[in-house]
Length: 426
Ligand code: DOR
Image (cartoon, rainbow, N blue to C red; front, side, top):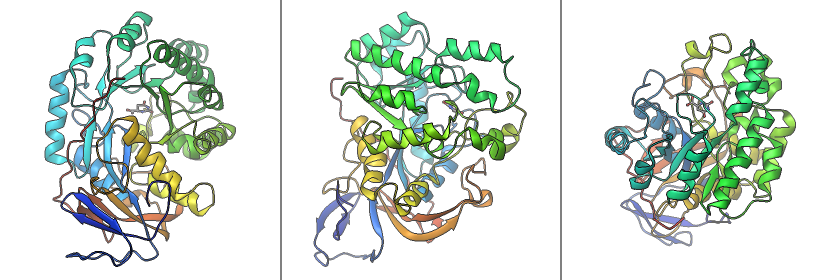
C-alpha cells in the first residue's frame, strides 16, 4: 500500500526504517516474508485513546492497551489527558512519557489537557502533539466552557488544538428536563444533536477567528458533517467506529455497553458520518478507546460510565467494510495513518515510504474471525462487538522494524518509541 495506490512491491526494512521499496525480487534480506495474497498497510496511528494510566489502571493500563494495539495493527497512539492526575502540567506529561517508555509495546504520544487556568503549561509543552479541550464535560472533571478562557487558549497558544464538542449548557438543560435520565436511551436525548452541533460550531468559530489549527474529535451527527463541509483548511475532523456502526436502535441489544460521549445517534447519522468520510469532509478514523470494567458498565443508567474499548478490532471493522464494498484499502490507510500523521505533524510516519519508520501491518482480507470477549487483550476484557464475525484481519504488526504481533500472538519485549513532531507555526 503506497500513498493512493495498491501495488505489488518489495519493502526492505533495515533497523527501524524502510530502507527501500522496489520491484518484486529486487532486494536481498536476512529474513523474507512472503506476502502473496496479503496487503501491507502503514501501521495505524490512533489519535484518540484513553489508556487510563496513571490512576485508573483497574480499567486499562499502558501494557494491556498497547498489546491490544499490537494485535489490532495500531503502531502509534495519541492519548487523552483525563487520567488521574490529569495531564495538565508539564510534570504530569513527563511522568506519563516516562511510564510509557517502560511499558508501551507501540509508539506513544500524549496530549496536554486544557484547564481554565493552565495557559502557561499549554504554551510551554513541547513533547506533545497538541492541546485537548473538553468543551463539554465527559469522563473525569476536565472542562473549559467559559468564553474568556477559550478565547485565551485559541489566541495565545500555538500547538494544534482538538476538542470534545458537546455543549455543556444544552446537556445540563436536557438532563434537568429528563430528571437526569432513567434508561440508557435517554443518554442520546441528553447528549443530543443540538449539543453536538452548538459546541462544534462554537469551537470552529473560535479557531477560524484566531487562525488556529483545530481538529474536531468524534463527529456524531449529520448536522455537524454538513456544517464542516463549509469550513476552512484550518479545520479537520474525525469519525469513530461507534458512530459508524452503532445507533440508538442498538440500545435494546447492547444497553449501556454503547453508552458513549458524544452519544450514538440515529442510523441516518451513521450514514451521514460515512458519507463525510467518503467525500473527504472527515479525514480521520480514530477509536476513542475508552474502557471501563463490565461491572462499572452494568450499573443502571445514569450511574453507568460512558466509553467502550475498540483499538484491537478497529482495523478489522474497517477491513470488513472493504470486503463489503463500502470503502477501499487506500481510504483506510489515509483515514487511519496518513491523515493523523499530517494533522499532528508526526515525523516520518503515516506512509510506506523510503526513510520512514517501519511501522507496518500485514492484513489478510480473506481471514474470517469472530470477536469474543474472552479473546480480548484490553484489560477491561470485553468488546461491544462480541459475537460479530468479520472478514479481513491484521495478521502481523511491526513497530520500528520489529515484529510485535504474529501467528495470533503478541511478542512481548519490544518497546515502542516516543513520537516525534515537526514544529510548525499554527
Ligand atoms: O464516552 C466517553 N468516554 N467519551 C469521552 O470523551 C471520554 C471517555 C472516557 O474517558 O471514558
